[in-house]
Image (cartoon, rainbow, N blue to C red; front, side, top):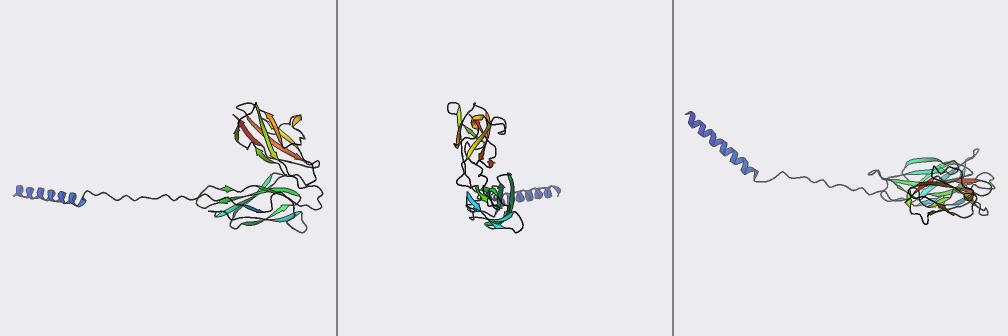
Length: 246
């Protein structure tokens, strides 16, 4: 009797295993594919006001103070959820940033009688990548100003952080100067060294009238430079730029 029960138990096991294999049908568990969502980088905004190199932008004067309210405006950029506005006093090199602007304009209180530059940073919620606009500059009219500080020179080449090839052991530095007072004559002093761009300039780099200068360089060396712009009464300075020579 026990033997018979054992045989029946074995048959049941065989039937169960056969059914399990048959139910499987040789199929496999479906694989769910996740498609990666690509978030586009925010676009570059076009600046509108204040106009680049505007000589005497007056803003809206704040009574009883030496300040004016300046309205900045720019075009909407693609794939953008918000903007940061960065305004820099070119004489003190002090910047202020207004973050997370949801519109395409912003009022900022600024000290009169100074030169400023500004740019807009486009930002998107779906990415950490940001996009900078061009940088524009203007002079905010002061009270009874007869002479305005010259605009900070615009560095053209070499761009900061770039690697350049020397020609006959020399590199040509290029920049562009502007002054709110159209009748002023501008001269430039170039600070150029391999230390920090703050060392005393060579005598032949002082009060030059051209907006370019050829400097001798050594391969494999990092050089630093900045430009001082003078109108005979006041001066402005660029930031320190650097480049490496191949």
